[in-house]
Image 1 (cartoon, protein in one colour):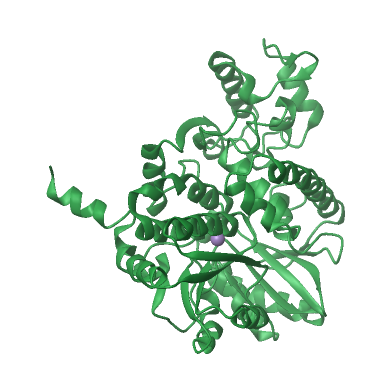
Image 2 (image 1 turned 90 degrees about the horizontal axis):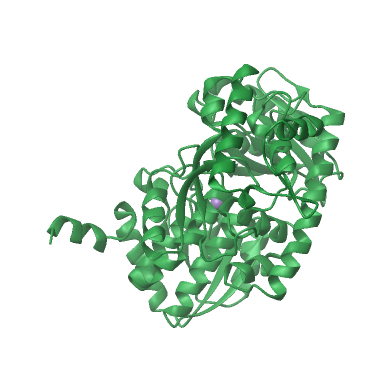
Length: 474
Ligand SMILES: [Mn+2]
């Protein structure tokens, strides 16, 4: 046996985080009961599922709550719940300056991947503290998984599938799949038999979308005559020598044989080349995908990216409990409820996107923005902004800011950039924090995607600040 390998595996999936994970786990083991607070998105829900399951397995009682944002009022609510230990997953680091004010009420334990505020605490697990990129290499669910492994060892490797759902939900995967610390989690999931890694067509909806919709809705591919073009997608398919329907219903990607998939991919590549799609976007049409082999083929849970959409569809509509139950294995009432919420979510996204396309965006020197008012829910306006980039009338070479009413005299701002802009120096986390604080609000997040809350009358001043800061970064 190779001694080095043995030592390495004893330090968990992400050795650089091992000491922090063990310190957090030891403190949790000493607690009788823990209040777990997590964020309301796919990464936050999978974080909560991983952490709560690992705590239960370790014999530690846990109550789970979700917060849309961890502001002072939310932290006061947690303090009032009267737990000695509060575990924060997928948030907490960015609010450490406030959290540490409450250390007389509870001991915080944090498993997060957001940029930490200017304060620290004893039990703090965050990749950024060890030089690992929290935007692309480890998600909140990944940090929670590292914690789960420290809590329960290799028996918790079956939670790796959920960690991958969280990472993909936070858009940490590129066309080569996940990288960095995330790759170690993928390896553990594959070894545990709960995850498989496949090279496949990289369009969203391989499990559930009818073939024409799979092609038409793939707006990120930007293939002229197919993307955002219903008639074009149908006629492209009709030209192929394939049986497109079964019993009168369109077939899905998952229904095709290997041979049929190759035929379709080859035709798609030829079409893209003939229409002058640049090589980098053509290469990005095929790449690494992740599948949960225990889930039924053709369902929303089989593919990790579709799974993450199901979770967003619950949490963004005040039903994080439903998403959590699905993560924890409920394939009955919770999944039925989640599917219903998913239909509503899809309709809202498509109506929101249509509204942005119709109304257009305002282009400043370094940013573009739109204000949806109350037409798009503040909980999904960031998703809509991300979808809008690349559609006609919205530039993909500028970051986009999306405003929506948040009630109580406040505006929610969601910002989305691209990996190409980040490589040139864009850091939306800093933009959101500085511009919002300059107008009496607060914000933060990641370099490629971030958010803020500001007073409702501060939009114009906020845009001016953000435009200037982005200009300085690029
Ligand atoms: Mn996250």
